[in-house]
Length: 66
Figure 1 (tube, rainbow, N blue to C red):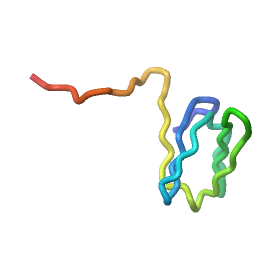
Figure 2: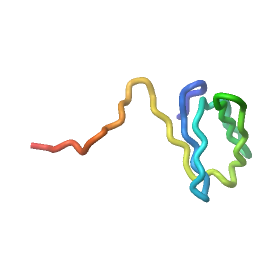
Figure 3: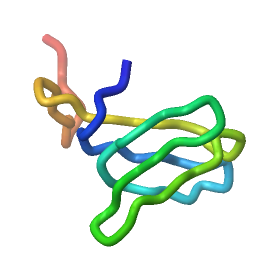
Figure 4: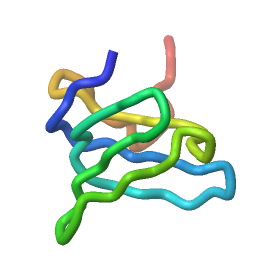
């Protein structure tokens, strides 16, 4: 499930990315609040929504198991 008000990246089918705070997901549109405006991305163009939660961190290098 996605959290509203948390930073997210929306990727379209063309590969365009919109980064900002996720403000709403409706059946036909995804709303992202960027620094200067709120952007609505039509759901039919959305390929992926990725979001970092507060308790998750990005790995900067592959972890080596041992």
